[in-house]
Length: 232
Length: 408
Ligand SMILES: Nc1ncnc2c1ncn2[C@@H]1O[C@H](COP(=O)(O)OP(=O)(O)O)[C@@H](O)[C@H]1O
Ligand SMILES: [Mg+2]
View 1 (tube, rainbow over the protein chains, first blue to last red):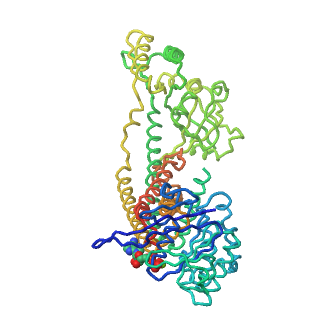
View 2 (view 1 turned 180 degrees about the vertical axis):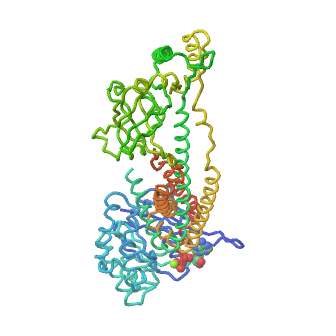
């Protein structure tokens, strides 16, 4: 079942003194339930922009984006916010934990925008998911008391806490050393698989990309599928 | 509905977390808000008490709105014969179905105390006089209608009188001998009213008919009676005119009846504390504004760091409305707490015996409860300041572009 589909999506930005800059052009991409996709590209190739479009934080300049078959351009901004909260989970290179809040509070933050049981039992739910990433005993630690790997594990728990159907990870290991990065990525891969969520990972590290089933290259804003047999 | 509710609670939780993180700076500006709210509430609260005291004092002399006083003079300046006057009075009360009316005469009466006989000021009135003039008792009860039938006249005495009796418990029906010209009578003390600050002499109220029965002929002849009524203000003027003509007619040739509003003095009185109130209120307003500016400043200073946070929250599904509300809430939650502290402090100040003594001019018997509107004004001011202080940062916060906020 198709979750998100991009059809001939471009993204351009107007620059003050020169021609418009094309960041993404002619992107066709389909993300279905349970997919594990990697996008590899150099810095500046437009990876983050692509991910922001997928996450409805940014809109295509031309082309069409569908969410569950419905054009996203017809959604109100409030509807997009709610879909983002309910169905999408973000993981960032810089972890982006909220400063001054404990690990538990960070994980519970997305549940503040939920309703019903998810809202009222947010601390319990957050603790369960912290346990899944092996950090239940660090629940009351502040971000700065955690190592980079631990912070990213908190961020993974936070991305998963509302049970999203799609996780968007933007260079999740980019700020970690190689070994820790691999451990964290393995954990992300595992918990995503377990929850049944689709996972789109953006990276410039081929080793990280290997964990995915479907592989793409992004070069100068153009996305192309990588033939599986060429790899390894 | 559910989403609405969790949205509100959620915004509160976010705001409380935010306040916790910046507590020192927030606390400092909130101290200002608390002080200002306290001052504002004290001004309103103390003002209400001072007002109450002023009203009470003038009502005790002139009656409550609308009070009418009746005077009838014969051609020679004397009052008409008592029997005639009593009949005309009873008829008029009947005719106009007036439920609050009283005769009132001032005289003196010799009373036998343990330590000797004393001349006591007596005010002889009808039972309705109590509610008409807001007479409040420290102890015991005011006259009831059937007290007129008592053989031993009922007395409501002031505190000095009661102390002279040795402060007896009223349920023991303490009695005192009233010395008459021909025969003595035994009075029963049924109530005690507080003494004014400057009053050191014993005084008492008796029922009008009881007093007249006790008075000797000379005293009866010299009796000067005031007639007063307490009526709904809407009909006061109409009744005033009717009563004047009724009494002039009923008492025959040579009688002139004058009826006038006696409570006018209680109205249009300038608030004696107006200037003080304005000054303190103005200062409080200024402090409130400074506190608000402090809050705005803190919010704006921390906003830089928070732009990223706001982007992160948006990526977790926070709507822009929610962001607006949460940032706004930070100020409001803070000032509401500060406001509550200020109001509680104000209540303690206004309820302090010292302030009550000053404001009540020592005559306040009916201490008004802490005026709820003062507390409400304090809380509303605090909330409004919080909302105003939160508005600017909240507007900035919703304009944050998410992709710029989380770009690195
Ligand atoms: N709003 C913008 N205005 C101008 N240039 C932008 C904007 N957003 C992205 N870019 C440019 O587009 C290119 C792609 O950015 P990005 O998607 O962040 O790349 P990546 O994540 O692959 O490093 C970069 O050169 C960046 O400077
Ligand atoms: Mg990037």
